[in-house]
Image 1 (spheres, rainbow, N blue to C red):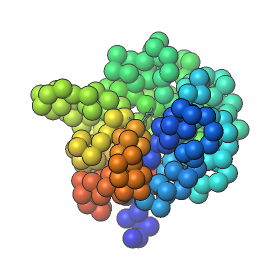
Image 2 (image 1 turned 60 degrees about the horizontal axis):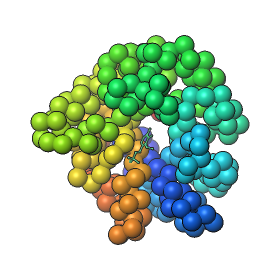
Image 3 (image 1 turned 45 degrees about the horizontal axis):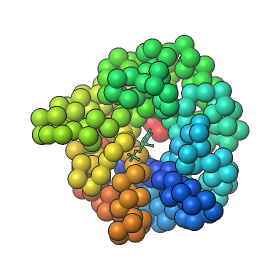
Length: 260
Ligand code: PXP
């Protein structure tokens, strides 16, 4: 694969939070998130995603220390827009930081980060991460106003929240949510934002999202860890990777997004 083709490939970020959820259910060290990260790399993941929540319900500070020092894949640190998390991100300087809402008042009705309403709070955090060379992504609903605010605030990347698409209860809802994602991805491309997507993606719903030409990266966790119970983590990731590749033959991508 040439480096150009590689750079155009739809990237898969494997979210390992729920490996930590299982570990924490019993305490101790098993299953080890680092082992999961190494397996994900072997299975074709392009990055590892981990959400250090304020309550540390799955990933812990020591996991971030180890992921930063022991894995070769880029780490995408999902974090709330708080001073505590900012200090951790600035200390580690991961490849990317995805700002996510953790408190109800930080959310839009769709569950993404409210960049419009929280602009003044978010702007300095985005600025400080940018200055530190951390690639900032904002996890937002597929909504034009939120995209425009993300652009204004200076984030190079947005991650479109696919939760409503994933939770659609019938074909009409699914179609409507996919239309919103399609329109939002196109708008992101037009205004120069790199577009990612994630939340609730599974084998049965990933292909239409992976086929959106502006989407450059998918972040997928819960389903893969659940499926790993039945087929193993590597096999689950390889199958997801194959579905993504099937949706996006090599070279099928849109220009007009910021380079990663
Ligand atoms: N992207 C973001 C920003 C998330 O917060 C999550 C959930 O942690 C995911 C992607 C992955 O979602 P899921 O675990 O449902 O695949």
